[in-house]
Image (cartoon, rainbow, N blue to C red):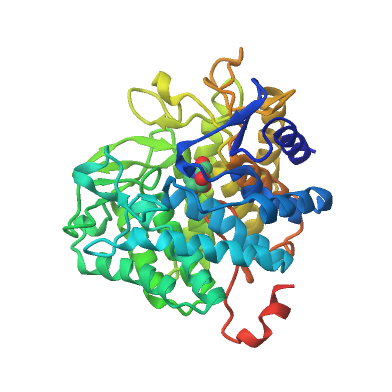
Length: 453
Ligand code: DMJ
């Protein structure tokens, strides 16, 4: 019902545009996609399919066939277009078998390739997909590319090579690893900034939230998606987690485990909503953890889930802030006005879903249901679902954006949280960072189609 409300209103007021403004009931354009259109449609395809919303899936597919156009003069974010559009199209293809999605995914992948034309092969953040000219965000330290951006292409690009027969996609992302493995890492940690021309780190800021997050996620998932054959990905993931535990993970005096940020050796005791995905990641990676640490990694996941639940529970709306702190006498609470917003993000629910699947502790479903009730009470409006400007003030002020990731991630993870484990089982599927499921490439590839069912 929630998906239907979000989708019907998008269709009614913003069809074909990127996102919906649910209060003003019109389209919302984000410059992240340049003038590529239809972000909500492509992001929602697999959710519609999984929820068996067949009519809606059919109209979304028809829109893709007739209107999704990459021959535009547009500067786009390589990361955002990859995770939402390439990821969304790949999942739609693997779930439905419809050739149009494969064709569009490969066509878009080819448009992204010029981003890798840098001296090191570390891609630019921004790319004009007509001219092929790239550049980096002007705010990024010393002209650097961003770890979570260039480190979050791997899963999609491996599948693009797999589906197109063109090895170039895989070569590009394997080269990123080569560059990273040649570099010295401060205390074993990966700074968020890397200059694509010099191949040197920029500012030594390390984060498992924004700017760093999905790089770590993709190391683990690359190994899982390779049917556990990608040893390099495995080693890079567990080594990184070891350094994160030593230098970033702390416990508050009230007993809450959190992941701090690291700036040149100093800790900032702040955790972003984005960082909350790490609970699910630690739990997902527990099974392969070295040195008999399986139980420890599950426990770490459970502790992060609890902390993130506290960040929700300590607000008036029972929805979590963008960032919360563990200093100045507070724990798991936002102290700055500009960190009190909630934009329909999925990470906490994502972690509940992984924890539920991996432990079957009923509290994760309870916590997920609390989030559903809060979303219905505060975010649902006549024209769809809106983000909130201040979760500590129950006289809500809406931000008037229905983010496309609300349909691709938040609602999908909620649906999976309350589904049986055999819907997209983890042995056969990994989720990209936008919650688009991609099949594990099984060693006995011949039986792949059978395995996925
Ligand atoms: C999504 O686009 C992805 O989950 C990304 O990895 C981080 N930000 C948003 C959701 O919060």
